Image 1 (tube, rainbow, N blue to C red):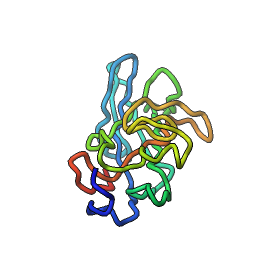
Image 2 (cartoon, one colour; image 1 turned 180 degrees about the horizontal axis):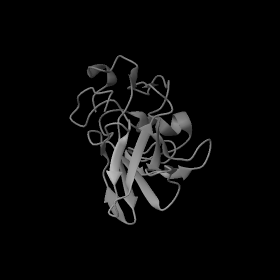
Image 3 (cartoon, rainbow, N blue to C red; image 1 turned 45 degrees about the vertical axis):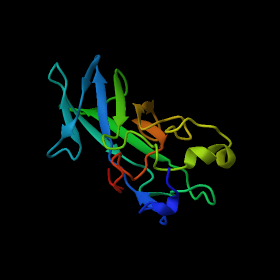
Image 4 (cartoon, one colour; image 1 turned 90 degrees about the vertical axis):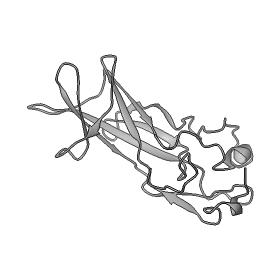
Length: 174
């Protein structure tokens, strides 16, 4: 791994907002949402014809990390993704059960070579994490858990997303 100063992004505090791919499993079938027109979210249609709207957001907004952790730790690689699934109909309903929600970052599948955080995680945070696993145990893809409060949604917390694509290019909006 190159030293942080050798990378084009190495001398800056890294901030970015990420875009994830959200996948749903309804009745055992996997559905990939497509961008919706009027919904403001993504719309899918289940095999039985029932339309769903998927809204995804990040509760932290723009998040900052530093590329090297040997001298300073501002914040670890840590971001959250929240998703709400709505079944469309005469009376739209927030879906609370009988689905599974997954997340992934198509251009950010690995953390290898992007940060030395996992070299210093034990010293800084008292945990020895595998490369690519965040402080809450989530990685760059996985299944989201249902949370009932403050409003019903699915979430994945502590995702160690970094603003560098797998091809090594700076991309804080992936």
